[in-house]
Structures are given as C-alpha cells and as structure tokens.
Image (cartoon, rainbow, N blue to C red; front, side, top):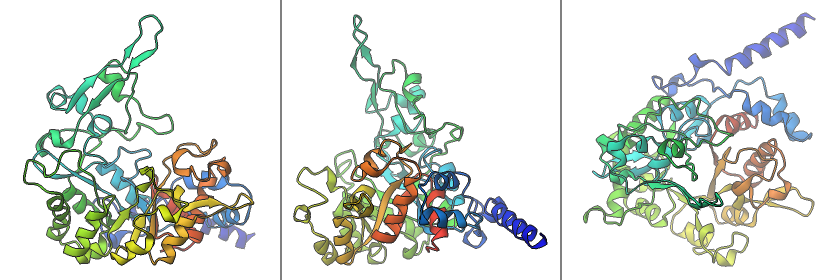
Length: 425
C-alpha cells in the first residue's frame, strides 16, 4: 500500500506541475523560465471521447505529464477558440498552453504601420470599431442593417459593414478593442451585429482584447520565449498603396522589423499565400527566406484538384527547385481514407514529402463539435469523423503518417498534449 500511495502522490504532483503558472512562460518571462505548459481539461476530454484502441490507451497513459512547450504546437492567431484573435491575451494564452511558435498575421494601417490582424478588412467582425462612432465613420462601408419583407418576414438584405486597417491610422487602431470574430447578418442595429459569438466559443475572455502592432508582437513573443510565424496578408487595397508602397516594400518591411528587434532568423517562419512573397524573401533575405512557408491556397482555383497531381501548378518538384522548403496546406488536403475507412496520408501529402518539402498544416480546433463530420477542415474525410475524439486520431495521422513539422491550432493545448505524449520536439 505504501508504494501505491507513493505512486499516486507522484502522479498527483506531476499533474499539478502541468498546471503551475509560476513555471510557465508569462508576458514577463523568457525562454529560460519556460518549464511546463498548462494544458487544462480539454485534451483529457478529447482523449476520453476517442474510440477504444492503442492510440487512446497511449494518450491516457501519459495524462500525468508534465507537459512541455513544443514547436509542434503552433498558436493560430494565439488561442482564438476562446480568446479574441491577435490580441495580447490570446498570444499569452497560447504560450501558456505550450505553443512553441505563435502567429501574428500582418497587415498595414492607413499610415503604413504593420499590425496584427487576420485580414486587412476584418475590423468590423474582430473589433469594436462599429461601436465607436468617430472611427466607424471612417470605415470603407458603414454598417447597413438587415432588411426584411414586411409581409413574409423573410430577410431581403443581410446586414453588412466593411472596416479596414487601411481606413485608419495606427493611433486610431490602438483605440480599438479586440472581440471574438463574428457578425450577425440578421442584425438591425450595431449592437446586434457585433454580438454574434458562436455557441461553441465564448466571450468570457474578451473584456480586454488588447490589439497589437507587429513590433509589439515581436517584443511579446521574445519575452514569452516562443518562435514567431508572421503571415504577410494579401492587401485589400490596390498596390502600390498611395502610389509608392509596393508589395515588395511591404514584404521587406515585415522582415526589417525582426532585424531591428535583433531576432535571429531561425526563430522566424515567415508565411504567405502569395508565392512571390516567399520567393522575394528567398532572394533578398535568404537567412529568413529559407524558413519561408508557402501557404497553399490553390483549393480556391477551379482547375486545382488536390487528388490529381497533373492539376498542380507549380508541382511539388517545381516548388522545391525554386528553393521553397516548407508548404502549408489545410488539413483536409493531407488526409484521405483507405478502403477500410481508415484515415491515411493523401496523395498530395506523399508527393510533397517525396519532393523534399516539409509540411505544416492548419487548423485544428476550428470546427466546433465534430459529430456531423467536422465541416470545412475535415471535408476530405468527413464520412469517418463522428466524435470530438476523432481530433486526436486526425492529429496522429498528420504527425505519424504525413510527418508534418507542426500543426496550427485555435487551442494549442490539444496539440501540446499530443506532442508530449509522442515525445515530439
């Protein structure tokens, strides 16, 4: 009984350590103080929900931790499943959950200052700009209420607005507060329009929503001891902006801010859906460009089919010949099922690896409940996705069969838990 009691006590201690805030990187800490990650209850819930099998048993057996930060776990816009995206609070939460790499999506303001936003024109859904009349008046398209047929009650026009970072200066941008990304298309008032958080998300952590410039994100990530993966977002304005700010100026400015902050190139993974941006970094900033990530968005091209290599232009081999070394498609392009209904690596994944490309993928924990197939991110395998535990099965195939370098997640703790159980770096 004494030995059993000692074992239980040890397990309890290790479990407690995995939630110890004093041992976790905070906004005032550094990489030297990062010892443990806080994974919280969600990974345990997901493991409990898995179908019985060897993987579930393996993940259950490592439940006592301790859990360490890992580069395999990438904070997608921070920890935006429950924190307003691209806010200080979201970034800190991601680091606390063990994300070894955190993302700032980069766009620019009216006065060409770089800020962290997922899109140049998403302020109307991700901030409180519409609730500040002086700033709302500067939006590209002011709020327009939904309209309804007076006889049938059917909606005849959706509520809309369009507010861009390029509509306002940096000083005005800093007056905003981040909120959960959502809008109510049936709204007849601004208040209704901005109060639309999805039922499987929450507003519990949205009281502050501190927006950040790109420079501020660099300093914060440095203090948190995490690596950085900035994505250069496609401008929503015509380029060159204001007649003299070109796409290459924009791409260079982003890298320059890392150089000015003294960040080593191996700590940065610059990303873009625009292959020309990645090529520009390779040719003009090779120490940063060699870790450049080509985000593969060709799924939106009607002529592209991820199951048919003959439709891929450029091919995997051609990308490698252009010195691209990391490709990043959405998860569903890397997944397929075999004749038995088992999740396996897709032809796209196999061809990428065969060409010498490394792979990063996106985005776990962005689909809500998975009982009905998981939606967009699981579209290629939706017939075999039927419970939340399948998220761990998916993660295992991505890690073991596909061999991805890392996984973007809206809740990094899930990936951190898995990576630690599998002893991934």
